[in-house]
Image (cartoon, rainbow, N blue to C red; front, side, top):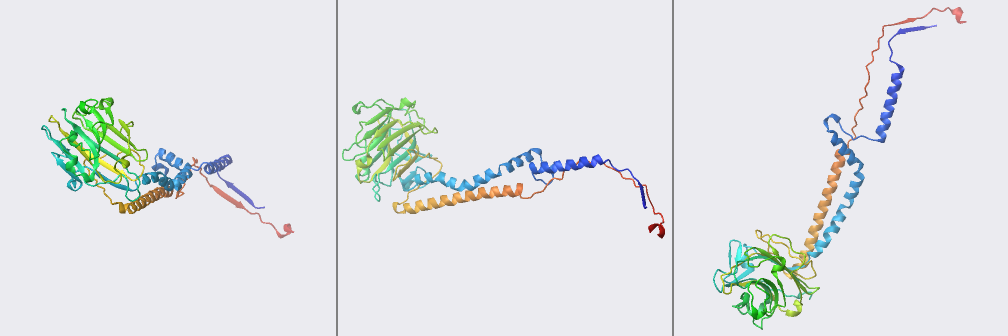
Length: 407
């Protein structure tokens, strides 16, 4: 019988059993709770591992958002595209191209980024008029026109007339519209006008409320509607820049006037809300818009620092966009190009939205490739105790067996 004999120092069999169980438990835990894949855990902060783990848990939600981002974006911007369609005429008061857009009359002059409508002298008067006429009925569609304008002005102390925003027929001639009357406007009965007055002088002949009021004058300086500016805590001739918003909504036939200090938000409540049918007032006649002022029997100075004007062929939100006086924007498109402009606007918006959706999708894919594209794993470091095996001597002894014993 062969005899095998050896001497060694083997490890305890309980150690191998414990090691096997720990490896199985670690493998099962890794399947149930996968750890974030990294190349070398020692080079990443612990909080970064937590963030990546959270991203992995919410990747399905992110994919859902990315897949719906483009149609959602289009749904949001579509109403704004509709509101911006079919502008007829708009302008902003600026120094560049000033002479090609505006006409200055009387003592009005442009200086130091301001339009001074009057000079510091008795009986001074001046006007600024936008040169392009328009109709309150669209010549092509016969739709009524909605109007929005805002302007920033200041009136120095004194008992002058103040200033007024005026709409008047274009065919009457400027000399017949503007003269030595109140606010520098003629009260000629042949010239039917509408004026929004910012009056700083009480005139009992026309029934003025006081020397600090805002009124709506229709063909006469006897105001059809008037409100005390002090009701909103404002003094018209305090020398402080003020801003007024005037909106006419064609669908409701309502004229609204708002007033506030320059730099403040547009008031929610109008100072005056007056019902009037402007398309019926002028019919198919062309009209012009302007701002006029007169100092009366004082040396009052009226200045204009910004003016924004916009008319559209359909119902629009009743607001005027704020104007930065340091920028120039003159947008005066002919009616024949409205469809082309609208198409280009929509096309540009679609291209912009597509680009935004593509960037979002690319960013999501980039995160996916960075965080989850490479499944590198961390080899678990088990706390193994070193075991030394000593092979001292192995003796193998084979006994000779005769052929007889085999049989």
